[in-house]
Image (cartoon, rainbow, N blue to C red; front, side):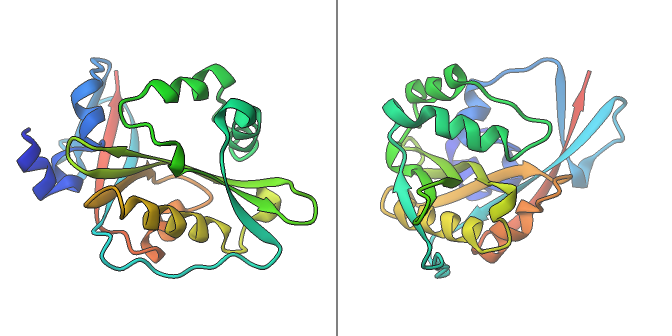
Length: 205
């Protein structure tokens, strides 16, 4: 897959962002476009991939009792880990793992965003995104809102805030995620203007 091929059709050329496709090799999984699936044997997980042209970004505004804050990675990595680990039942990350993102070739601290509650200053939401300068691609990696703060538009506000920053740095954006997710992130991203849905089936040997 060349850069030109990927840029022309990001959701169908690869299940992953371009830089991960080139950097990550895993011989223990098989990845097949759902439209071409041959019913491979093994445990299957289905993932979505979406595209955003960054031309039209909806306006989702936080309620008055919340505000955005850029993550200070040197001081707030514990809060990053806490939000992620308290947003999932089946995913746990460590401070070492999240701090290692700093060394990624697509790291951009401006795209690490918290949503805070004004009165309590509690950390209630988090978004982490990247920019691949090689092909000018923005990538949303993590989006979490703590369970007690969901259904208030925080997730959509985070995504659109992030997209407006990405627009200054990249030509398009992508996001990938697991289809079987109780929080239904696919719907959030579609409401924020992502489209060109493609499904990928992941088989583990």
